[in-house]
Length: 401
Length: 201
Image (cartoon, rainbow over all chains, first blue to last red; front, side):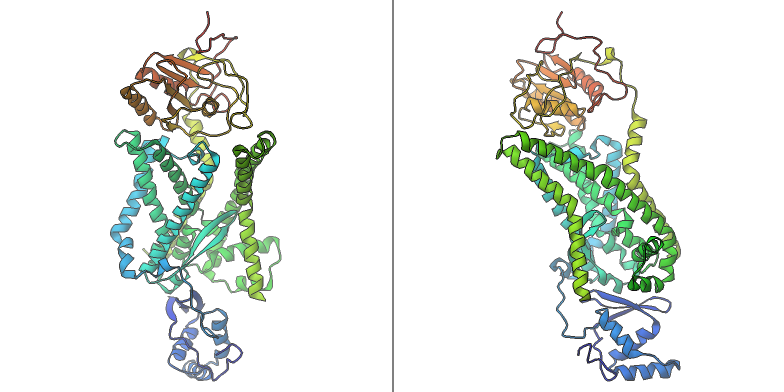
């Protein structure tokens, strides 16, 4: 069946869809296989039930009209489902999920049981307690210089940070797998920060209470790694264990990375894990976009599509957005301040130092190449978010075309 | 707990965490300021003050520069490379030592031939001050231990844990790219020292 062939006599293949009541007169309908979900009213859920029972579009419309006494445009509803990607008009594309997220639930459920969560919370509390007991273990930027050699330090730090970020995402994926929700991994952007992200849209098929675990799973494993590294450094500092000095410096670098990652997750306005927790707890559907558009409306013209999003926003999103916009604005201001006071000055220092080395060091020497590599790295850090933004714009345009 | 209550509690917690994280840079600075005490008067600071020899970076490792006046150096031209505090088992180039001092840390360096037990004792002290101290061998020393801070030098004939601890706790962080909390270089006039950093009569 194709979108153009859709007519009153069409039968929609909806047997694979998940339909779950989210609220009064609100149902979440979606395909856990491709992660596309929409919120429909009760009549929509009834139509899907009738489609699943084998009714054609016209028959389902007649049945609903008979039950409610009101005419209903079932064809339009069917088209909405197709446009949203919930029902496939053409040959269904095989969903490409991250293999980690397809682990059988029974194998990983114990990682997210009551005992496991007690351990995760214990690790976070333990790490904080050690920082309070021994403030000299708190990380500083110097910890990223594992070796005197700047390039070697940069390489090791970046490799370790990427690996630990993948571990964070793997834990999201495993927590999703534990509740039967497969996921995808992708590179995205949060404000001025490039990020890896696990797409767990399929969680919408679950009741809210079961979504928290997968959302918090990444921070949970971060806490365990933080606890292990701080614990080892604590024990080493007090002379309880002997460790090679080089390993102690690597542990300090990992602690720095984990603390930064955990702190980043608390920045809810960047749609981090804590944002998802808050949006779920408040029962919001599209809080970030509603907030952003309601602010944009004050200073800029909205497109027709944006006006529709704002007009159709759920009342709860509108209510929460009234105070959330303050946090959002504070966050944007902070991000600009951070960029101007930290990112830009550190880039200037790197560029200035590298330029001096390029001018004075013998051309082609290790020091000279090191300066060149540093410039490349600083440029990448500055422009990576812009490149991701550009990529997303191109994708959006292609999708519209 | 009803959903509305849960939503309110989670919102307050998440918003507070966001604000806390955003303000942590400023908060950290405030905590640091509140903890700071006025710098010790010069007669209570261990070691001998040394004249300022400059604070510029050399353009690359191995680049020629004015020789240091003390052994080990306490200021002057230095490498741009950063050495994080900790325990090192190989000697640290002098240009890098000066950069360590410029960041407010203290160097505890021992002469070749120092016994394993003495090295272990020095490293134990270094481990108790992981944010402030670099412990390393220093082949240029004929004997004993050299303690250096920015423009500050103390030579010990052997390992004296009490003296090392005093130097670490009283000299570290007095200087970090500039003098801190009212600290000074403690030089009221030109101090003449020999190459070992000892005052000339």
